[in-house]
Length: 306
Image (cartoon, rainbow, N blue to C red):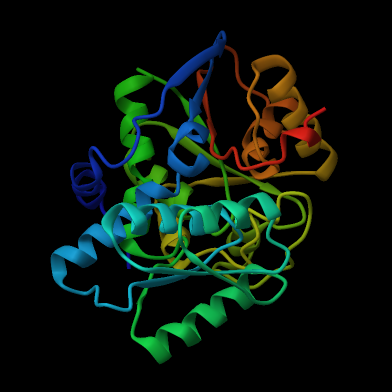
């Protein structure tokens, strides 16, 4: 199964007016940030959540039981926000390790929060069980065509906003964002996935020739904590020859602090991963190369930035 460019364009029309068109900022010669941390709920995730829910409403798939989803935090926030805006009940399953600020935000968005397991995979299984018992709509955090198409609208905006560019650096967890962006711009620019060394879902999938389970850990696990790459992401990255770069824990922490110190951007560790590839020298631009870094999430404790 694949997601087409036409589906991404349809998603852009469907969610128009529901999500923010986030800005791009030129921060240095040849370097642009796409500030998706300014999206509703502090990450890119509402794009996919709205596209999934609005499509379900159009198709009559959404009954009185509302939706269930599993998330380390950001996908749950997006689902809760979209559900509230559309008047749909939402039950969000999160690991017990989910950061307290994200859990508090979920409750402020009027979602029912259920903590289950210590990582995303366990929370996801609990969400599946709840769907089977209740008949609620499952909103997958990343491996669903409508979710991927929604996330791909980030790429469409980049093409309109950033002019000509050569390379986009994107953080990878389950792969919904990079799948969507690769689908939207893979014929126009190089797309590179950047992953924590302690949670390299894309790297493992490329090595194995298919998505495989792997370890989950590290400072970015609350937002990039999927155990395996999504099937849709694997098809998209293979189709568009997306590469994987790995960055270490110290590089992620340093990049996050640098984004705050030099650019006044308060980001979660997962959102610093793409920039860490540049800041640490893991990715070395060619002369004259024009790079876009997607800065994808702001749900963090500001007291930990210094």
